[in-house]
Image (cartoon, rainbow, N blue to C red):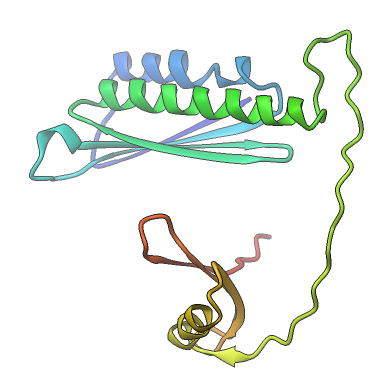
Length: 175
């Protein structure tokens, strides 16, 4: 598993680097399919000292991507918190795969092939702004809306977030 660490506004100490290696460098113990773990550590100037350090972790696997972020008064507390979050997410993901029989519960069991039924829906994608798409989504009482964004000339997916705000996903081609 590859471990990529970036930091903004802070120089990591040897102790912090060792803790990152120990806590986040071994996430593959919880799930075998991890290819890469990206860790971003940011020191921010905040009113609350408890939220001064932000640690974001993205785990990339062969067929999955999990993300977690936590804040703390020190880098070490934020790393501890996010490590627990990622371990829980990986265990939950592994459990869901076992339930669907994509992976076996023990090495002796064989994994069953995944069987899914897809219902295909064709739609006319109309060019509109994100605001117009939000109006359409509300009008139709949808949780998400796919459209051609006239502001960016890209296909976009608008969705309602858990906090009530809107999220906008636009594809980005990686070379």
